[in-house]
Length: 250
Image 1 (tube, rainbow, N blue to C red):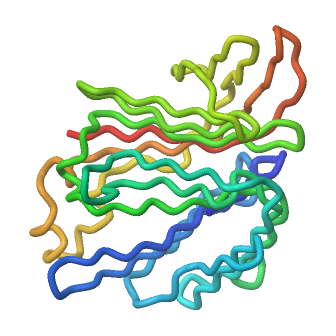
Image 2 (image 1 turned 90 degrees about the vertical axis):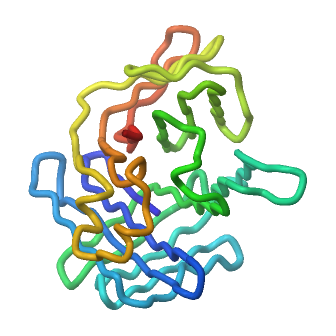
């Protein structure tokens, strides 16, 4: 779940449950900043919590540990992709509940944010160290006129999925943009907002470290906020701040 405004004020929130044998592990966090140049703050919790609820096109999440309360009201239809499956089950599903949503959230008493946001759920029934991915690029660009969401992973069997205004399109994902036949989304002025490893995030939980293989512990993620410029047939049509990330295994 996230939201970013034109000045670079943003919030990115996570709610996750890991089930392993007879154990359930809960994790929630929020990363936020008042502006493009202000301090980045982070709050996380491993306390049991309630997952976000989606009802009548509205996603709501309240987490007392993070002191966050937010609503995302859909303005686009959902996107669902089964990324990995076999004959018996769906092993990895990407459910983008709200490619574009109107967001209204608060963190504590002083942080308030209104703007365009995005929500998704990743459902995984495969051990993460068995994921056929060496490098993952994920991002979302949300504006009044255009919505672009993408997943791109590198491996022996690479996968690229790009949706532009609700339609799946053929596209290239590069370090500096998304390129389709008649449209492009160009990246500029990138700001790193988080850069660390899975091992660092769970260093105080020996049981989790014992469960995860080294491939996952050594996974490195880099989250960024940048300026995205949409061009149609070479003509600029809109420009907004957006969120994207690169994740590398080992």
